[in-house]
Structure formats: structure tokens, C-alpha cells
Length: 90
Image (cartoon, rainbow, N blue to C red):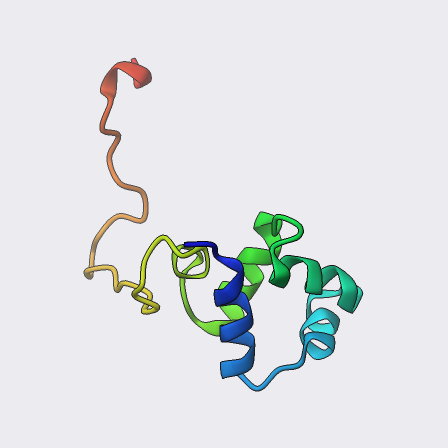
């Protein structure tokens, strides 16, 4: 699934115009339009800002998951998972 329709859906769900969202992100409206239409790839920093604004994950915005809920971290869980390939860390 292409991610850009989800950008439009999330913006509309939050009753935002492209102009208002572009102002929030500090860019001209035509630039945001290009992201939403899939004409330009969205930069990571903008994607993170949108995920925070919409209280969702970047994976959801990119269409990698259909679950918009941010998973809760169990109490006491480490922020960084242990390395899975220990040969890289020796």
C-alpha cells in the first residue's frame, strides 16, 4: 500500500487543511501537497512530526501496519532491545 493516501486521511480526520498543516510543519503548502500526492518522498523528520501530531506511529503513517495505536512498553522494559546479532558487538 502506498503511504500517501494515509497522510491525507489522517489530515482530514484531524480537520486540518493542507495550508494549516504546512504552516505547522514550517513549509510551503505546495511542498506538503507533493508529499500527500506521492510526488515526493516524505523526509523522516517530517514523518516523525506527523506521527507525534496524530499520536500514532510512523509505521502506521507509512502503511507498514494497520494499527494506529502506539504500543505500550511494559513497566521496567528497556528502551533499547538487546542486540540480536552479538557478533557485531564483539
